[in-house]
Length: 235
Image 1: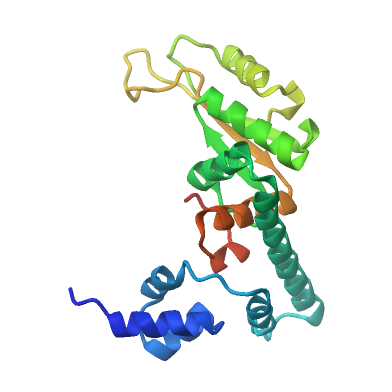
Image 2: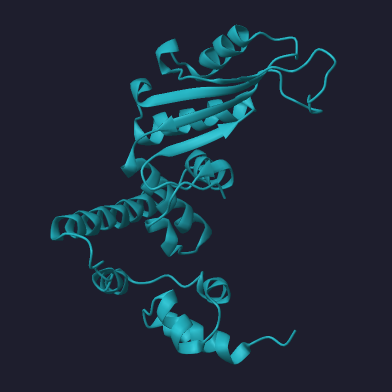
């Protein structure tokens, strides 16, 4: 396939001038997916970002109060992401970079909450320690629930207590969990199933998730506009 070098160069030039991805798509006629890949390493200045934010179109059916709240929320998310970038620059610690990297790989890119899950106890213990150390998250801000599969020689109560002990949490942090009963003949039992199940961790802190997302972009040298308007999705 012939590479669109001319279009790519034009897209990068326009991005450097502070144009949004949508504007570049409109000007060049190239797909949004291609433009996003071509310009993802170009970091906008604070002034360029502010100008783009100021040009966010207002939805006609929204009341003025609703529009103002949406704009204010977006502004706060942008500010928190900027603070996250500064945290990485100032902290410059391996554990901070590792925690953010883990979240990029295993976490959900939400707008308002930190959500992370895994079957590996050591990984979960490290991540919750990362939240406590760098964001001063308290235990009463943390909730977990388990996806547990019976038939592995471990009871749900054993698994529950083990996860709470590993994470240093009280039972009050545990929310309603999912228990899938496996037939005795093994039907439906997957190979390599972890006997203690999957642990899902959640912290409802908009500032924390946005700082993590900002730090990720700083660590790996890219900008992702959609993270400012993101909904729940794992990447």
